[in-house]
Length: 385
Image (cartoon, rainbow, N blue to C red; front, side):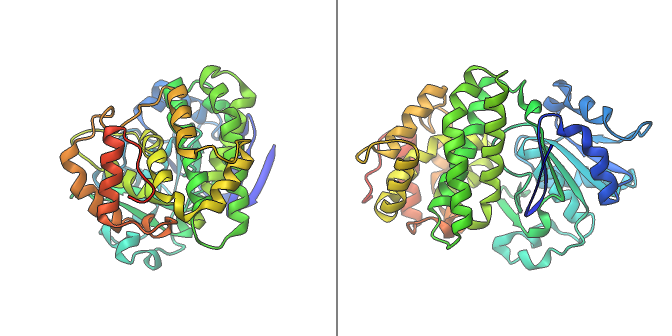
């Protein structure tokens, strides 16, 4: 068993799930609420979790987690939490159950409304250490939410906002690569590209944080080296181990900030007209944002090429387009059925997103609109656009 103490306490090993009972005792959780979604239940992973909890304990399970967590879902889970007199949470699944659980952990100890805690509305300092204890168990290798300080939640008015605080980092992250063995190829690819995007954007962030940059590069190399194997051979335990570590490392670097890919994918994920997977959006947008940022991050682009074993003249945007294609990812936003008439609102929201401030090249509303148009049509974006 590998026990990592970095931002939080992380159990990382095949079979780590079996020690969740110890984590509960250490955190003083006696009456947990399990937060999952319907797919996690169907996959039998909630049963795997309940089997390792203290003998005879009946634990309530909230499964109505939407693909992108919403304010109304947080409210429903909070009512469920309170009605069962819970004193902590165990989130199992991808980023959606974990982020939803963060919202419940926050509002179970802080007065509403939820909106006042959003980062862009000055909410960071309003979140205190009183947040309820949360154990996060990722079943995908991508989001990094198990060690992330943010929760992305869509409000009733359609805004997808970030709620950010070191107090929202789960008190325990239980990273068991065996839980990802049944992940379908398409979801393995999408979540893997999410992890890759995290590593790239945090490395390119202009904030000064050399330790985070080193972690981001290590995660990127691990993911690039193993994502194709994990997609093609889902039962490959070594590949699953490396992808989960890459995802964890991507999450550990969130402290440095993300960039324009996430500034766009956050509001796109809040669209009501179509349900869009966050990791897939990141994969599609990444090459176009790399083209946009090229002139403002040349030295770091050279470092990425060197670490990935590419030639000096290789174009990173084209490299990731080819990787996406090989993984079966959609090539454009039009392939994802993103409504083009939403672009004006999405571009405006992107300028207000917390990730925009740490993009290496400042991006205006017009810049974001140009990226969206290029990603919709599949036309390479000139770096001077």
